Image (tube, rainbow, N blue to C red; front, side, top):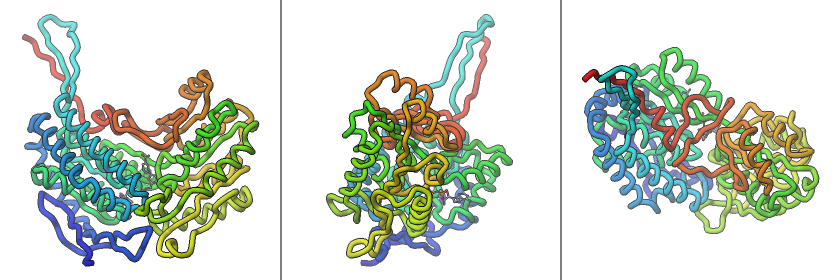
Length: 481
Ligand code: NAD
């Protein structure tokens, strides 16, 4: 079968050029597609096109922009099965997970399409006679969206849709490990009739294109999701240029399990949050902090449940966990497994690359559980971003909360308990941007703000009404009549 080339998209035109391969991490013999590798001059052209398209797009009324976003959602919906399967093939997550994510992208476009009819401003009574005062939202201008591979559709969607509905024009750079899912969003924007220049897409390596993005004069804001190292660099440069910036980065998310929790549900929630999507969700649990009276029983139950997880090609029915996204990610995971062995001893399950038929052509690691982990160990402090869980012991709730908060990260957290007071102590005491109770730490919806605290995040939150704050500015008006 011939492999299709996916061009970049600049000023309403598909732009060809040299390509890079997008390979299936479950079966590296399969090239899912060839993507055109953009250049710094493509970035400059895309930024100029976005700048030229900005006056007309921002002047279009909100409901009209909303109608185009509804159309994008419809077009994605019409190809739901195909787009979901492509995601599994490029990123490795299972087909049901990919379907869940594509559904979320569609819902995100519908949600923000509706915002086009609101774009709520604010009004207040003046202290002065015969003065009417109010504030309206205005777009920021050209915004650059830099996205990671782990949610290759939903993250681009939750940046793109609010950016567009607020009247901004966009330059998107997807992650090279999984660019096709984002490309499908851009294709839908084109097919929906969003005018040339409003949306631009340049795939390619972060290093070279990142510098070009930062130096593109028309760019007024950057929304970035990815690793802390890259986020920090972007922040330094963006501050120098006084760009508006939003960073969503790494995590080391804890789940606290108390003795009064529904034990079976807690085991299921921890295993789900730690290993589904191969532990490659930014909100995945990587530390379980367990009250000592149930600790041994909990470790045993988690190990037993984990051993039952079926690892394999996410296109196969019944598979729970796919591969790591690429060889580099797998090597990082295996390195941390060795670090864990040195620090905490032999894992209670997993701890190796999977080999044999069905595994040899992919980047598969057995889901791994370390017990007896203590807070100073590297596997308790550093983001691994793979299927590795560290289980730690706590004397009581207060001790568990202290351990949970003893991290530089603060993205998500979970508590398993039936005690209402503990729930509220956790709600007010846990240092994280996203809290769950009696649910996995991962699994978010688009209708409420999303983002972390501490070193995990910087700037305004994403999604829900919060997204409007990043993608719009205020203009305040006083009228004497
Ligand atoms: P990454 O930082 O390597 O890459 C993210 C994006 O930045 C990619 O598009 C990449 O090409 C680009 N990039 C790389 N170097 C750049 C540079 N110098 N200038 C500009 N852009 C550059 O991250 P990743 O490996 O794609 O994703 C995994 C990371 O993302 C993990 O740390 C994970 O925790 C984080 N993440 C966070 C969230 C969140 O909401 N907090 C969500 C998903 C993923």
